[in-house]
Amino acid sequence: MFYVTTAIDYTNGSPHIGHAYEKVMADVIARYHRLRGDEVFFLTGVDQHGQKVQQTAEKEGISPEEFVKRTTQKFSDLWEKLGVEYDGWAETVDERHKHCVRTILTELKDQGQLYKKAHAGSYSVRQEQFLQDRDRDEAGNFGPEWGEVVEIEEENWYFKLSDHTDWLKSFIENQPDLIIPAFRKSELLNALEKNSGIDLCISRPKERLRWGIEFPFDENYVTYVWFDALINYISFAGYKSLADSGLPDFKTIWSDRPVHIIGKDILIPAHGIYWLCMLRAMGFSESQMPRLLVHGWWNIRGEKMAKSTGNVVDPSALVDQFGVEAVRYYLVRDIVTGKDSDFDMDRLVMLFNTELANEVGNLCNRALNMSQRFTGGILHHGGPLTEDDLALQKSLANSLSEYRTAMDDFDLSKGLEALSRHIVHCNQYAERMKPWTLNKDPDQKDRVATILYHLAESLAHATVLISPILPAAAEKLAAQLNFPVLTTLKLADLHWGLLPDGHEIGLPLPIFPRIVSQDA
Ligand code: MSP
Image (cartoon, rainbow, N blue to C red; front, side, top):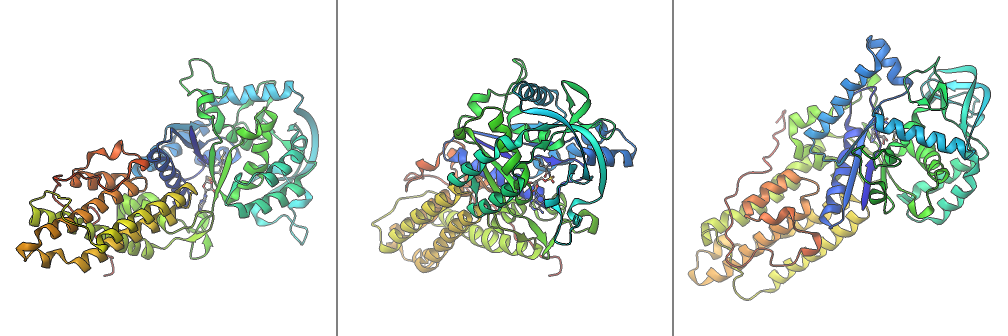
């Protein structure tokens, strides 16, 4: 089973383009794996507990329950609007999740992995954690990333993280595909060095925070939001679930190493340290450890997106303005997996207009329109093949193999570049072959049919390859090609000759209408 998850989004605000990127990226990866023929389970959802939610709800004068219900809806509505299709939906207020968290807490306590102790120290309200000296900046202060820092003393429950960090260090060092891209590995190892010997505080006294999962063996405490949230990856996959929960069978879902898609800000310490150690403490073996696919951030004019400065892009408004295809395409096309990128509306328009409206649109128009006009909508494999025809077939084979390698490596923009190159080759082939001129010569009918077949067949392949990224557009393309096998066809089935001799194609309808810039 290819099990892929995203981070679960905080429900203390509205989704922005960064959240949308991660979900679209996961959706593309899930769809690509289905196209590869893999069994796929795609889980996403929302992180609903914690101090931030409690505070924002208080400010709005409503209960946290009501508040998260409202904000959760904004996220799920957006995923629907963006065509993000998941198999599992995680909400941390779900009783089934709470049951799993409580079961894990009880088991870890029984195994001696949890203990209670008093601690006095500096506490970051924003990050909801005690700070250590290592968290101070060079001037000895706690930087702005920690927000308000207060001095408190309290008794709490701790998880023996330090029992697992030596193991983690060698595991990270010896596992080539634990962290993707690999350049993040050294950051993680450095952080681990700083963390050694420190245990993780996993409870919050109720007098300070009520909005969380109550400890099963100590009713005065709720669970630390990260300990709760990370468990979503297993709770909603059926781990320790009750028989009638309606959740999937855990062994089936977690049969291979899952892929957790996360942003670079939550690799350290949450996923790269806490989560891997938590799993080990629960008895997960090395071969069951997830892979962490760490993506970069979308910034705006080089600046971090922040609600406080109004520096955010609303994905829903973007879809209203440019359409879902333009937004999905841009979000995976203009960022290299693992790196940051600058969100740029002009590039969104430019990439849509050049690569989709012009190039795919042109190929579609040529293949379908000319076939309708010159061969009555019927495709013929035609006469003997020329070097140009063979070169086009070769270019398709090359693009397909580059696409596969890139997509297997989660390098989505590279996959799209490979596809784009093929479309450009097709249009150049059409320009060189000039079927519209040849058609005037009755002796060239066979040659015209061969050329048109090459264009339509190439378009059929492109339709399959683009389907994980633009599923709705791919369906429309397939309908025009009268190529109904899109949903059942697998990547391995792609061979020259998908469209049989005598195949009747449909009429071209515009699928990617050019975006006319407002100031044009
Ligand atoms: N709730 C935690 C995750 C818990 S996972 C067990 C959280 N939520 S978040 O809403 O702040 O972020 C959700 C995801 O969105 C994270 O992976 C984060 O990296 C990603 N992004 C948030 N801002 C982003 C950008 N500007 N660009 C790209 N992704 C960004 O962290």
